[in-house]
Length: 367
Image (cartoon, rainbow, N blue to C red; front, top):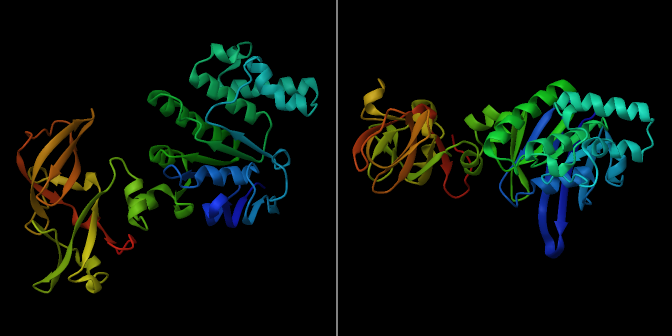
């Protein structure tokens, strides 16, 4: 069993800088977990702590139920795949993949069997006699993966392994990694700053910021129910729109008052907001939940506002429309044939059943 558990783990660098600040994380056996966050969030440091490449300041790390804080990296039964591939330039692909096994003095027959079986899984059998300089970026990444796979570790650790690839190759390699996980049935922990990679790869995602895990859950649960404004804005492309305004009471119901427009807060949310009447809050709404009034049947005076189209970004299958009121700006996703004129005012409909409200001071989700 290869569960990985972090209990109150911190890493303090010089001058008291907390790169990792008391995090708790449990990765189940054979699970694929992604650590995602912006630069400086602590995700790569967390991975290095698990690998043993950094020493824990406080807390404990368990692999397979055993505390590994004082166990050197080579004895933790992990394999790590880095961003820069780290292939030996003077060795061919076969030699690169077999290097760790040769160091451990495995029998030649077993080395050959493992390397060729792994090369077949990754589709690089025809590359075994080539040197790294003769390979493309995607091929080098497969070799780096193969070098990890032949060791048959309990845990695979990936530190932004696709960030050096072009957009098309990243998409292809994401699919390959998912297939690889299904085939190997190994525990995998993957670090990335790319929320698309996180959403598509992880069975669960740990969203990190400032050395702490903000939310750890299944991708769609994080997307639909973010715990705070940071998570809501980080997960999603284009990101969630945030609009400042006040909660006001009118005719016995609660409304969100942006200053230029007024939209009614759904009844199922109203019991969470009475304490905010008269106070500023932040309304969050995702671009796919904003519509042109001409194309929806649920428009009313309670969910409609007027805004000017300032920018259109054609994306192929859809358009990203940038709108503005006097006080706010927001992005909507529209059909590729929906192309209003720049400077045109439109009647815009918010799906109020899909909005979120955040405390302006703490950033925590109200509802």
